[in-house]
Image (tube, rainbow, N blue to C red; front, side, top):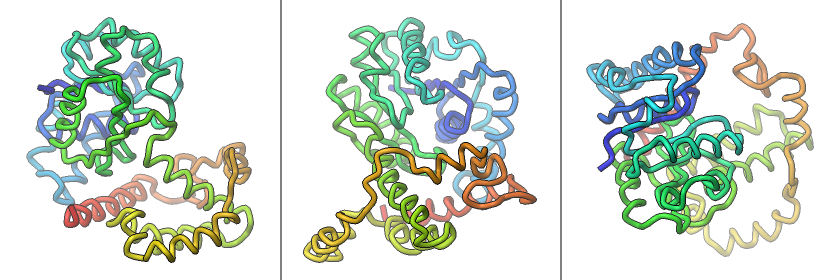
Length: 314
């Protein structure tokens, strides 16, 4: 039975993952080599837990209890030595992940299940240098950002691990109220990110073509397709709309949709200019003179409202 969790990385994803497990009573050790990140992490986690308590997702008593269940350290061996389950949430760089998994294979007990939060790299490449036995206890467990709010976690079942091991991890995620997607093929981006990037490709194409401005494109998505996506999947929506109609519309539109095979120039130019979004004060929208902490809180509150609403439909 999985009880002791180790999370590698105290960045945006690692903090949220650690918070979620702790909130549901698990002991969590977090590895973070950067001292500054270690010092910041607990305070950010506290703020996020307090917001969850304000919105009724957890109790105020559970805030301190959860914080006390999280220990953050800078020595990998000490963090993972008795872990039942390790999830890696380090930068999306293949050689870093390969080296991390090689070390984990040596440092962790034989029972430990190793997982990666990768959203774009192949599991087979990441675990290339671990033992054959460990490969049977390695998988992708991909969370969506912000991980302590978005219910989705994608779990890999690519044929390298026994069914009972997969079921053990699946049960772990159900115990923290996550919605699990079982992914059967090792394809880049898994399921959710491929869908999201397909939408993104068309959104950027509409912007580059001058069809509408950023605000109106986001409005069209928010109050059109995404309004339905909040409670229903696309295949169910198609069933209700009529597959004959969907087929006709696809015949008419698919041939004129973007078929770009690389990032759009409009996005690349923003990156070149250092306009990276909220974290730099400007992206597609301008955030100068805005309280970023308050903006982030408002963004999370909208997601929490949706989280509450989504539970009604489950």
